[in-house]
Length: 178
Image (cartoon, rainbow, N blue to C red; front, side):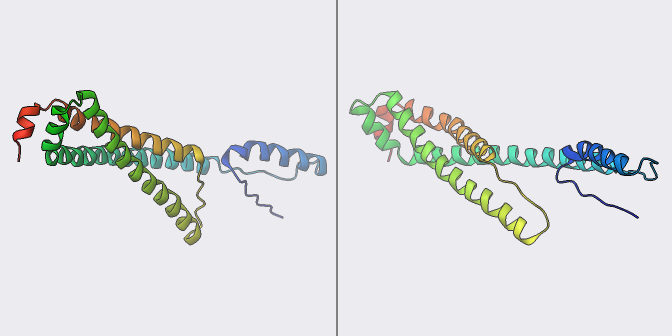
């Protein structure tokens, strides 16, 4: 006779094997059985998962940098298009910090919008994968919170340069700009 067990999580394999051994010892004192645990397969699965996480993390890091550069370019274009407006605001008494905060707030709104869209894709794609394959995906609040926070933080960091550039404009030169 043969009995094949499937364990829900790799972390539970050792505990499950110990439980099976106890039951078999109680019912078969002669030990006319053997237990085979494919530990090498488990090790390979862990290594594959580790490599997958490294690749996925690298892709995420590159995507964050590219996204940050995109945000920076959009905000630099916005600063360039609104040079005259910046000059008028400065001439009317707006402080440099007011200009910085205005552009950082615009960057924040842009990054939150992008973050929400990213979260929607991050929720829909794993559901589609689970629905169309045998791969079980797990969505956690923690993963979503970290992804959203990191993307917004990176965007705001990349928005500092354009905001600072806008604030450092000479108001007289900005008013001359067409």
